Length: 230
Image 1 (tube, rainbow, N blue to C red):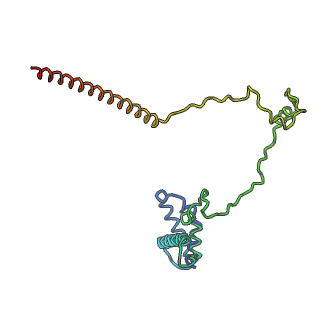
Image 2: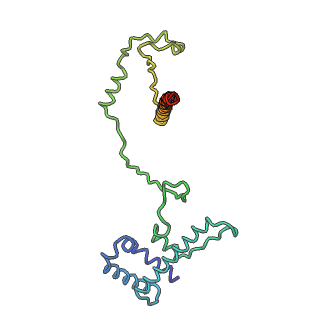
Image 3: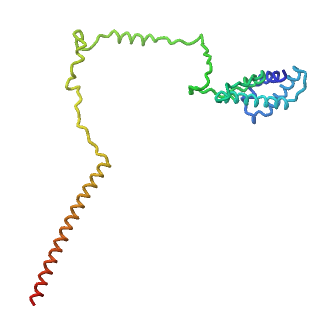
């Protein structure tokens, strides 16, 4: 009963204590808590100081947040049977109503797996209706009533006309497709050409060396013949 009374008194100062900055309105907050303590003492008949009421409120706020977090986490647990949610007291429910998003968190409108919340749409009876402009309406009627300027006779039109080929002017000429040789393939071809040229060069060099050796051998044979004659 005492906790419920504290919560009820705290609701009256919700807009001030929960939205204004603590550092800027510290003195006013203190006066508000003292005023709340006087109202609490008069309504319950017990004597409680403002600091005690404030500490009690913060403890209830912390406890409510822990319970809500435990329930939210327990839904995703596996094993051990179904999760039994923790029940909230009347005072804790009042705290959750005061604090709001600090405990329950902000709703995510972009997450399909988020908890769905009902949205109340307020309809206004005195809504301004869009009235058509007479000048615009007259212009539209004028456009609609204008006769067609088409020179084609659509009376003889049949669905088979859709099968007729397009005129030459409307046809798109097929352009030759550009062939793009990949850089890797081009590099391989260049390497092959280089190896072929190198192979031909080595073969020519070998052929020249063989000719030189053959000439040297013939010269030595002639010199040997001259020595044998003497």
